[in-house]
Image (tube, rainbow, N blue to C red; front, side):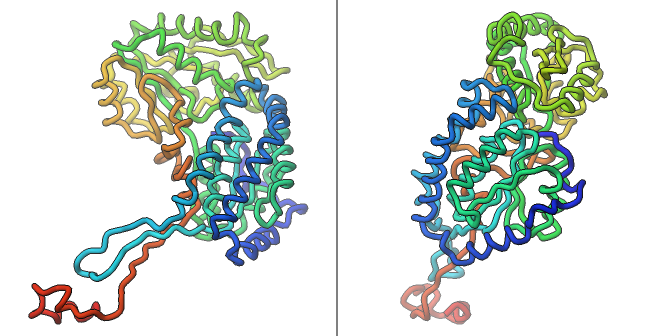
Length: 469
């Protein structure tokens, strides 16, 4: 998702005593005060109060970090957090209840259950592209599950990081929730400690480093990564609607979205018209010059701007390509004829470049997708429902949408996550609670019973059951 320096590539920060921080939270967790429903609800309510109090500052910080308009920031970050909090407060009591299992005849009389208990002291490492939403959503799961948490925001979104530190520092004592600001050194110091869960959102390369650090302590992880999320466009698709929806999902947040459409597989005879319709949609969204639109964001850093500029050099620019290094503006862009071996078609773009790839049929598109690492998201466009069902059945991805893009992230009742190189584990709604919980199998049996009364067919073979009495 986010591209940032390796969190293990620098010396530990001399200003952060990560060991002491973890020990303080672990001592608090071991008091078992986090177990009751009342404690969990109190923490979620405190988080909601803080979120509402700091809403204006959060919106201003997102504007400063990524040039997000207030409308976009509320739609994609702030509003969804309120929804997650509402759902957690409403349902946490039910989530906490033991879940009934099945006890087979061979262990009767017995009852089987699945108990859920908090994992403990957790680390949440958030990215820069949705720096508020992707820090707070996992935290909701941690608190609902009865865990403590250390939150590490990205140094590439410093304004939002600062607001998070003040907001969460005011809402919680450090033994419940702590925010650690800083960069590579602070990340390294935190990853060197033993946690009960690490929840990481970011790029695949850094995800591997986080997994390696976690493996030293056999720490479980949730890895929300990224990848090249394809759009498959069938000949039967409504091309105008398809172009408009893909354009919205691609260029929101200037393309810096982990589930943004990364490339489009489309029949060659539709490619020219599709590019025209995407350009029309961009004009409708952002005006004749997106540079002047308050709704169009900016690239997060000079390094990322230079990376996207280099990627744009592969293939032919159908429209867009305008850029300004000083303001880190990069126009919505469509690219055709990019070599499949080029970095543009091998790396996750994470910017406002949309390559169009000639693909004569849906079957060919399916083969193309299956030949590459499993993506975080996949989008299929066809009027023929059977075509979309074939794509869903014959491809694997973290999530998928038919005839639209990105909207599955907003479905709070569905787990969001990747598969293979695009991630491990999922969250949102009850899945967030489950991510931070251990599911303990429990069988409850009574003391000795008269087996002749309970099992008359086996009265003559009671020896078979004696070991269970």
